[in-house]
Length: 140
Image: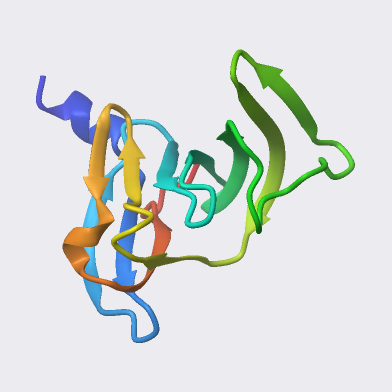
């Protein structure tokens, strides 16, 4: 029974300081998907950016919000969709992310969400950190 969780978590996320690359944490992924939740620094409204690991790379798959803010997409690109779902907007996309760098600060209160678990990124201090797939030899 212990082998099932290991098999399900073939892929993980490596959190590293940026620049420099010092390892901070390795977060197992029960599924090849994760999200970043944060408070927009101008509108002070909640935002969730969703990602998937595809062929060992990060792809942004959606962004959900209830109010547009500076730096956020206002119109979908070709092949994307912006829908209203209840009180929130959902921008569905397939944007490859070359490097996912997060500027961790107290105000946005960024959280990394994997499965049902949320990790407060502020525990690593106010700094830039890179989130990268760590999938070993069995990349999804």
